[in-house]
Image (cartoon, rainbow, N blue to C red; front, side, top):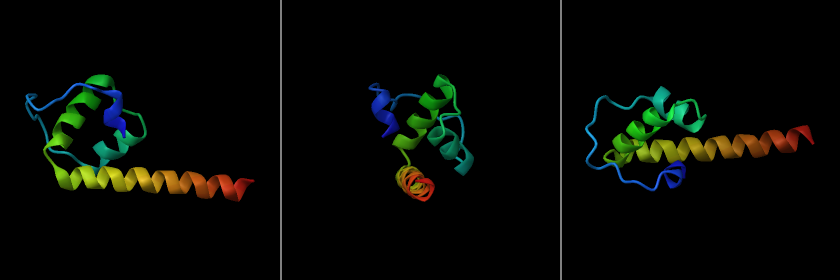
Length: 73
């Protein structure tokens, strides 16, 4: 998962905002800068529903990539 790139824990970081679907999509697509990514990962630590949503979207992206690879070859 993406958090593996960041071995630090973020439990003591203050939450500054709610997590949106666009935030999750930006994380998956690598569109966040490092500070934004750290903040979002910290927020995700305390939100199991959004953690599951992230995992679901990561799986969906992987499945779409595999489908596209098979379709184009």
